[in-house]
Length: 364
Image (cartoon, rainbow, N blue to C red; front, side, top):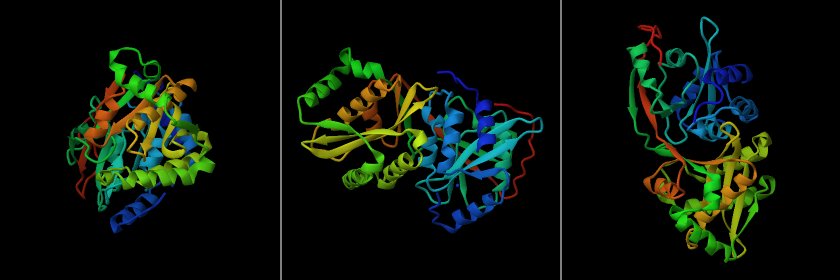
């Protein structure tokens, strides 16, 4: 897919439009104090998500999460900021960064929007060079050579690596909603059997009322977490789902939607998605969790019913996101992806005496 809205346009909207602390370490506290004193850094709070949604509304990408205000808010729930960079000729560049949701003393920088990504990253790293934090750039597409920052600034070492904790450890999968709903062809045989089984069962779904169902969602999330402790090192805890519900209640402009599935009258799982992303064609699925592991293929049923709802609301595609584990990735591939987008992480090593004086003119 090609970008419907150019990167520099997104940067301009964010620059002119646009703080969730759960700080644990002395290093993180010191880092937050440092960036709070930098004029071109703005803390992003829930109230700012409307501006993010406006900026991203016409954008399109093979990684729909990169244009999702909900994604940035949830991943940055320990602290999310935006860096603004204005070039000598008025070129605007912006990028988001956050405290890593799982690793202490670690900052995740997301790929910049705008015309001077390397310069903006270099200036930022100079401002924070002597903090106790480690830095990495996350969700980096294979064709975006941000590691070239070390050619621009030879003091920096940039190493592209495979992510091991967050949701782009495995590729981002995007599904054609109509193809999944119609389920035609041999490749959809397993899903057809699953849906036929559940249509004959007592299973039911209802639309989530986030103001009323928060307690039910929290209970389901806790039940799911209690049965999946092998996910503890990943970004899949009850507070992740609780934060999603909080976003839905406190920032209604995001229009988060969802379903609760019940089996024999008992709530057994839920899904939550963000509609109208990626140029208005893609719904981003952020949760599809079941606490009833005894009902075979209940998670598949919930995901397909969610796709049916998305299609009815006008979405052409459903982004399942990436995965933290091989098993989760294998499960998502079972929905017959339309396209998959591998993403990487770039680890940065920045010396304490780093100065952002470009070695040469270089563009990516």
